[in-house]
Length: 123
Image 1 (cartoon, rainbow, N blue to C red):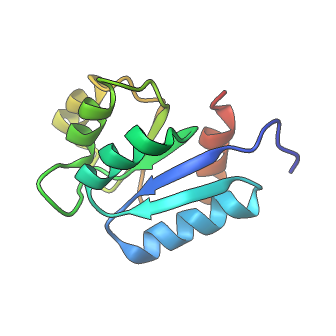
Image 2: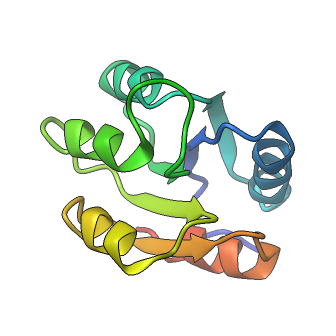
């Protein structure tokens, strides 16, 4: 697969195996994973300092801040694209996520083809 452009990606995921799996998928496709974090608070700080091209964000995270709350905070200073990768797809979660102007919403278990299609659609 030839990429139009390599993206620098932040992965925010509290399940190690899923984080490693998603990291492997995007790196094999030629993208660069800047960091993998497990807490929303850490994601906010990292985006403020590093400005990635894309965030792969889980919703249920370690710490006080879930992925949606982290994105609400990030949206106060950044328009970085976000793809939610989550095991929770109920309507109330989707409604909360909608407020963060997300780019895609992928339900776990992650299908590599679907994940790469979503990543590659981000300009």
